[in-house]
Amino acid sequence: MNKDLKILIVEDSPTQAKQLQYVLEGHGYEVLLAANGEEGLT
Figure 1 (cartoon, one colour):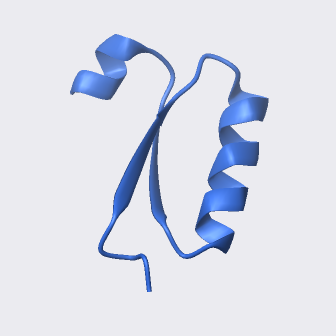
Figure 2 (cartoon, one colour; figure 1 turned 135 degrees about the vertical axis):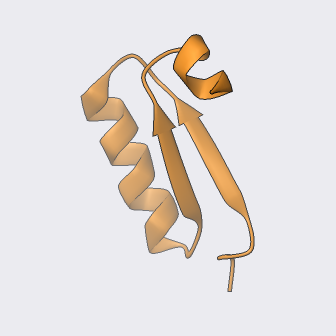
């Protein structure tokens, strides 16, 4: 349902990033992770 939408999570805590990813993917979103702003821009 929400697979057409991608969400970028930029989070320096791997634990928090994975938790957000788990919740969002559970609602059908495609999630991309980045550890910092520079990584998020590439």
